[in-house]
Length: 319
Image (cartoon, rainbow, N blue to C red; front, side, top):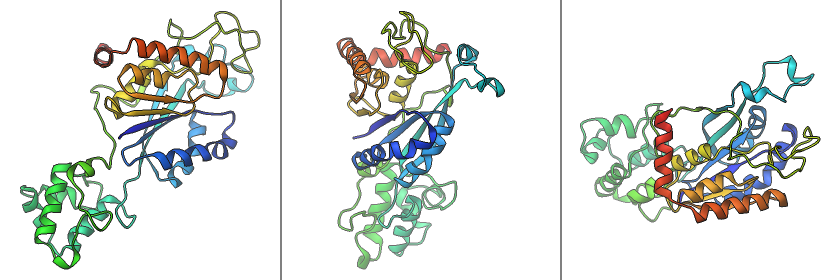
């Protein structure tokens, strides 16, 4: 079962590693090889926590930049921020579980070593896969041109090695030393990815100020909000449903699990429910949790996954 973790932030960068450590450890224990982790934070916040994620077995994939535009500067200028270029971005960093072989090596190394352990010359991989030279060149290479074999091709390699390889070393291409990996098991070693044509890693959208923005709690949502009004935001860092839905569509399929451990207003979970995923969210702040619950109940009531995915596609084409 593929799933996604969406992580938030705390107060200062220096304390982030200690603050995140137990959460990352718990999530790592529950994650599968097909799990993705999306880490929302500032640039310095992410850079501070990145080594901890790597040590925990998470592998960096890419950084998505939310460009909030010039409108984000309003109200954020003080004696410190005026002495630098205005910061109008937030980042979301994608991680995957680092795939490793039975001896803890990189997966490309494991594939080649298993083939060689069977006593087979490299060129025989092409015969196994029914191609002229692509198998040796793509699946058994050790450089940056290595391809993760699709399940069908992996299964052909394993079948050939176990039928024609040295019988003394059987089984080949087994992570537990007893059973041979199937195509489905192999495909489940990496996360699902649904490509959305035309979308890059820079997402431009101004701060939420439309009907999607939750307002009117009359509560200080951050130290600089001294006298909140009816028009004041309930949460200063509310994520657009458009963005959260984009993440959900990219890395999951209907029925997959979305875990939002620092939920805030539950934007990721609301988007997930609307798209037919199973969402779980946690939030320690009682008022935020109450607002999130309302959003999730509304999302469940009006959930129409096919229409939501079509709307995301249409919005992308308009841009």
